[in-house]
Image (tube, rainbow, N blue to C red):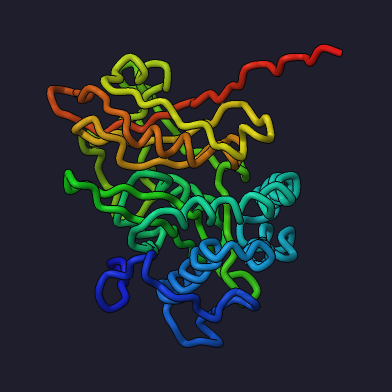
Length: 316
């Protein structure tokens, strides 16, 4: 796939109707569509369901996105040794992921943008989770396995794009299933570069015969914090406040060359706190990061802390 396939015109999530997908999943075999069309339809239906508030249907979507017979699939796709490790990680987090996916779609449904589906072999956008696709492809023993990154793209006034990730998807037993690289413990190799870490582009990837000057570097969150110019505090979600939910939300962010946060991705944190953290961090501004006298993008993390005052004990 040489480029992202788009439906006629720009498909805006806010105007798409619910499609009859999800029950058994759409596949190339039974629908005749491309993976891009099928995954876009799947995503469209999930977001539309989230907007209607149909929790039962949203939970059904989540169940259908989990990998059935995952032990056999992981071993067949990644080999015995890697497959065993991935099976253990997937099993440990299975229940949490199934409950978290509806929250993910609820969060994305509150935004407007275009659904993008990218082949992991030829991603259009290098950041915001593209490392996951590279690692999956390198570790897959089954070289014909196909993986796709699905995200929601929003165009900013500055002309830059912001991507919110829905995850990676692959065809398993006739339906598309979701993969979470962090849950599976798949990590990108990094190397130290002038006090920060740079994502390592493996020479095993097709067409990568040289290592040009990086346009993005990885910086520790506490280091990047010193470059903040504008910090907006999150609005505490009322539901979380009522339920006395506190804690921290960790976000992986991409800071553009102009210092604006152009991509966000949730690493951890309570679902009721995640969207508030994302909305606040999107408004942050940083000083431009320079490397060899050239401005570069920055890949880093932000920890947003939500705390509530202790409740007062009532007098008898």
